[in-house]
Image 1 (cartoon, helix red, strand yellow):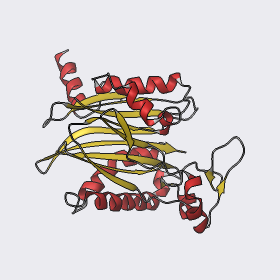
Image 2 (cartoon, one colour):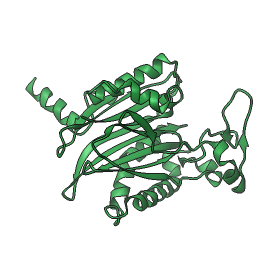
Image 3 (cartoon, one colour):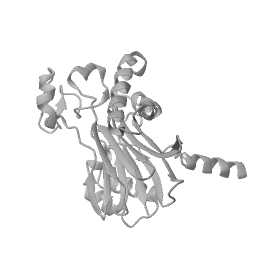
Image 4 (cartoon, helix red, strand yellow):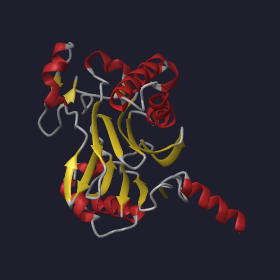
Length: 282
């Protein structure tokens, strides 16, 4: 029994929790900063295609909070690959500490190139991504491709830090690359009639018409910061940014907050995979 309790605490410490579907952890340099994550499989017949990273990690005498949502399509292989490799590629960039935004852009590009080169092993699918790195509990750097989203709340007001890469918003660029955006009645706009996002990792068959260039934003953490939410589109299809932060404003425990958001998305009839990371600043 003691061994099981120790194992459970070790898993929580690295953000694994008691199961692959949920977990929590906290900063060592600021005990008031905690994180929690929760995933729920959607109603589709394929395997769960969302993957999460949520952990605090010591690197070169600094503490990094590493948080991410990877939402796959046509396969769970590529989001799983991103979970294992993307942050490593970011931290390998020599100017990460001085120019983190540039480092994240280059690492996204390098990672996508590697995925395309390994398409024979990784398959033809793809993945969206939203990543957030909290540097020494003071600076937040967010990057994304696709429609998974990062939102910060300060003084109760939600602010979106990522960009939803919708095909209708990037029609001109897609057409310039030789592609097209379909807009069939009853369906969402799709690149070449297939993919509902304009930017993604992988998708080798569509890559000529897709971008993997991330949007990158930086935000300073101050005493007004309440929380950060990262979530896949399974949440954002049914909740606005402000509705999401309002739903958890009175919940102190980050894991309970993440579960609350997934439950509310299900109550609102979301049928997609739902994954959510919440970072709370007490």
